[in-house]
Image (cartoon, rainbow, N blue to C red; front, top):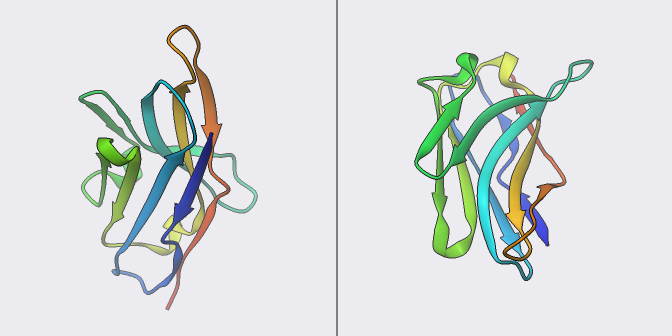
Length: 118
């Protein structure tokens, strides 16, 4: 199982980006998908998570970021609006996946850089 991310880059303050992450490989089902980020010198932190119908956002991104999924494609998106310099970080896709009916495991994407700068 692999998580493949895309969509990072350089954007000016106030701009927008959309990150994508697709789970590929053979597995039973995806149970949780989300995004974390890690700024230089900081710990990795939760940005947004989608578990079933429940969505969780970190306080700094509420009202600006939107997480969504396309279940048929096992893909999660993060739409980021009104970006601020403090949003600059490496963004990591996360998924909890059941390889079969009885087990589950956490997977991480390779990370994509988001830089917000004038």
